[in-house]
Image 1 (cartoon, helix red, strand yellow):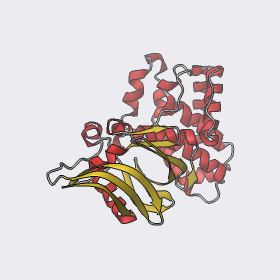
Image 2: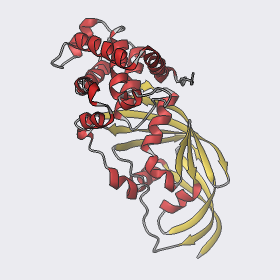
Image 3: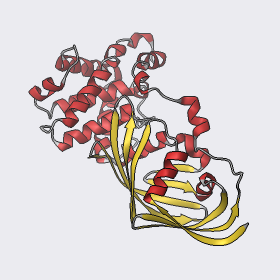
Image 4: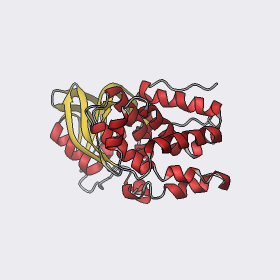
Amino acid sequence: MKLSSIRVTLTEKDIYEIVQEYLDIDNLNIENITLNELIEIEGTYEKGANIPFYVMGGISSIVGNTVYVKILKVKIAKVPMAAMVVSAALKGMLKDYEEDGITIDKDNLIIDLELIAKVVPYFNFKLKKLAILEGQLEAEVEEVVYAPHKKKVVLGKKKSEKSIINPEDSYHKLRGKIGKKIPGKYEKVMKYAMIIPDIIALFWRLLRDKRVEMGVKATIIGITSYLVLPIDIIPDFIPFIGQIDDVALTFFGLKKIMDKVPKEILLQNWEGESDIFALVDEGVDYLYALLGGENISKLLRLLSSITTGKKEKKA
């Protein structure tokens, strides 16, 4: 049976069930989808902890077989995220889906329309138009063919199964990761790398502390997102830092935060064994001497851009 053209309406519940069944992104849990001229998605990303997120976007255009979804707002733990961090994070999370036709270009999610037809069971069709209405998604499709034996497709599954990440192992493996990348004479970096899990725990407690200003929390979210999400924002023009970026960004970021948060609040939220103030001062001095003033200046400008969204330009 073949139909020339039909109009299909999908409710929020329909879309949620399709996403749950056919979209499988490691550690990502989508909990709610709302349609109201724009698309709003809420859920959690699990990487050592359940990180709540909120995304708002809208269909900006359909060109040929491609739909462009403009990402308008992203919040992690209720804190707005800078555009450069959002773009880098989404690229990392969706890298297994590039062959399926889902890509990211700056703040645009780009979807091959044939992809949508691929995941719908029992029918083959071409998608002609797509519109977001109140509580529903309306699609106009053509060349509809009934295909009872059509195989179920789970997007990205064949690739993600090869590289499933156990969140609990992420920082357990950090020593080996860094150890393979840096020369033996820089082994002192290991000492600071091993304290990162305690610093991340401090960050999460500061995010929940109502006494900490929102501007500081935005900085914390930017740094934490870099550490726990699959992103890479250290530019190639900063030599060697890219090999120890976790350590450098964490220590200089924490130093910036410590300058804005009262000492008593930091101590109340710190549960590590070391003296956090002495440790950070020592680590910052060591990394400054190791990497040099010019590279550190570039890193600090990059750190600032995480929350402002303005990318550091090449000198």
